[in-house]
Amino acid sequence: MSEYFRVRQSQVQFFKTVPLYYQSNDGEFILYKKTGKELGSERTDQTRYPQLYFDGRDKEKALKELTKGLNIEFAKQVAEGGLVQIKKALGNIVREALTPGQASVMLALPETIDILFKNLDRDHSTMDYLSKISSASDMVIEHTVNVTALTLQYCFRMGLPDKEASNLALCALLHDVGTSTLDASLLETKKRLTDKQFKQYQAHSEAGHDMIILNSDFNIAVANVALEHHERLDKSGYPNGTNILCRESQLIGFIDCYEALTYHEKAFRKAKKPFDTLKLIKNEVIAGKFSPRIFKEFTSCLIR
Ligand SMILES: [Fe+2]
Ligand SMILES: [Fe+2]
Figure 1: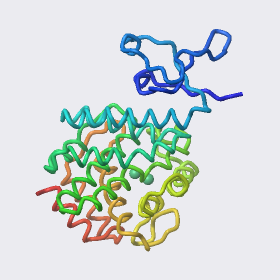
Figure 2 (figure 1 turned 180 degrees about the horizontal axis):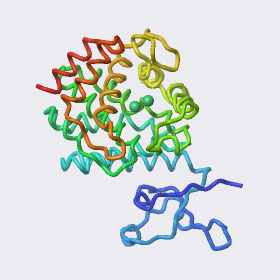
Figure 3 (figure 1 turned 90 degrees about the vertical axis):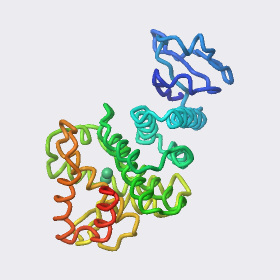
């Protein structure tokens, strides 16, 4: 028997050619929209549908249509320039990429970055604001979007070539993709993790690396960053306690830590002032965990 997957109400219109189903009272899946038939606007404008599903056998095609739709939506928001909406649309894409069993959505992320590059004002304050807007989204999604915005801010300020900058942005978007393999309760808890829970949480580095290697032909740095972003130069990190890290991992690991410190009060998601965070992170640099060069460069990008 085939497996059926729920379609989010807000995303029904993205499933252009894939057939959709609803569930009858006795649990049977009944065709709602035929293959290739688009939902007319009178149907997509409806505010109430039955809960719709797609057939697992159409999964590959369905996810392709979904990510394409999300990217089009994202491009529209980027063109219109409202930062709150841009952040929301990017968050929607990250949410799908972090949904268990949907690792193939990763393949559409380079296009997402392309959209950003082609349309976005590179004035560093845009990225600065984008990272500061607090959204109602889940913590991992907001964190991922913030890390990506801060990474781009660094790249633009440092004047890195587009190819390098887009690769770093992809590294940032996917650095925590392995969290999609974790139990949701581990990510949502506001309490301090127990030792046992922390061990489970740490598995996201290797899981992310394995997903990226398996599912794509991205630059090897993208997989390395997923594996190494919690490693530290004083060998105090995980999973391997190594100080042999690629340049990209050192940068994203630093920005990852900066973002987490900035939004330290997880329950309130209230941003600390960058200066206060930089003071905290400077202690980590002095302790030998991060590269002093990256600290200097990143600081100068923030205050310029
Ligand atoms: Fe992480
Ligand atoms: Fe992270």
